Image 1 (spheres, rainbow, N blue to C red):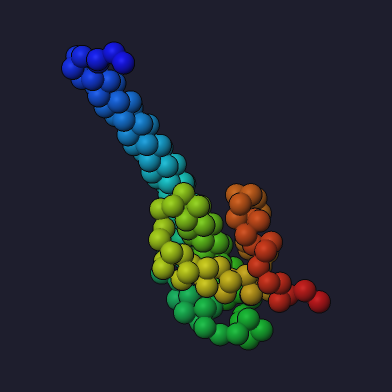
Image 2 (image 1 turned 45 degrees about the vertical axis):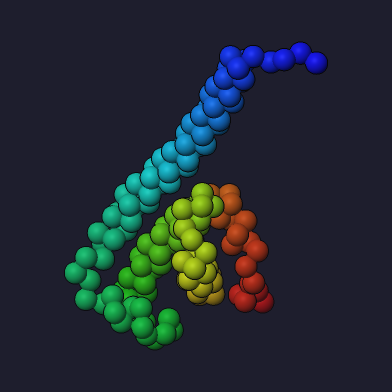
Length: 150
């Protein structure tokens, strides 16, 4: 057996250190990309939310629209309820995306799933769900129990 000099061992340890550093940098870059994607989606959601929320500012019928059964609402109150529903769907789709990126923990996601199910169970307002949602969100909705089927 040949005796390996201490210089060779030092070089080997140095190369292992460099490789470990590169792996760490790669992981950090991936994490930064995920956070950036989440921030971009959040910004788009905020813009959409502001658009739908602006029409609801100062709306005196908001409380009634959200608490009175659908059949008892006036046409105007139904319109307000639809606006709120659009706003909810925008937020819920964003929450789903953020969860897929790993930016929402399990405890919060469990609460959000309940909200999604609640919105989905409002059969008369289901058409307010995003017309062209992210495909993963559409898949999620398609796998929810359909209590609106005849």
